[in-house]
Length: 122
Image 1 (spheres, rainbow, N blue to C red):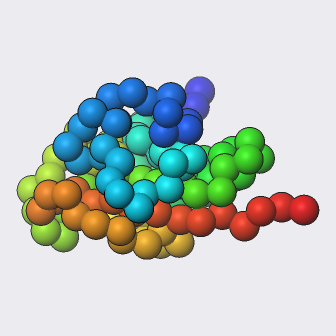
Image 2 (cartoon, one colour):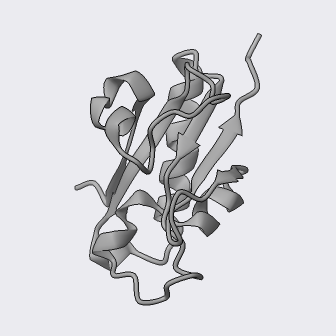
């Protein structure tokens, strides 16, 4: 039985992302990004590094399929500690930061746009 999963696809595969005030593209944003949109980890496996492993796997999956830039749209429990587990399904700022992502902008107090450039394999 799986202990968790993560969703990662090209941004274009998620039409709702382009319409959302949080995630829609802005001038200067790369066009060909992939997006890590959510994580699910079974309750009994939380706080064991599963989300970090899922993020690493998502990055590798995207890289193998030609992605050069990956974005995440996490929440920030440091700004609002009362975020519920259900609200954290986008991942957290610290998860993405620890995964090598850089903060690009904050479309709201608790949400962030984070981005990582992937090395092209030869």
